[in-house]
Image (cartoon, rainbow, N blue to C red; front, top):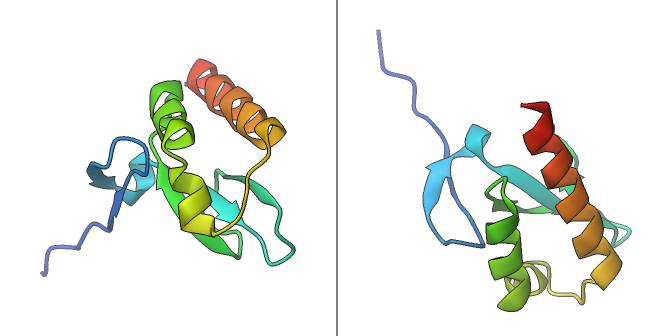
Length: 92
């Protein structure tokens, strides 16, 4: 039996490779709305980030998500993403 390949993705914050299931997907929908995709199944352009606030802060400071999505990201979106990541950490 063949060994199943584990999909790997790179975090935009720390720039390290992790298994896809260990990262959180940030998605820009066709309408331009940016949100966290905790299921990994929303349609749209995606970027991956570690589920911790430090990686989000690094990505925000270097504007890596803005580069990945080729658009400006308002401060409210970053705050909402930080709240969702923090609530996800407390649930685990």
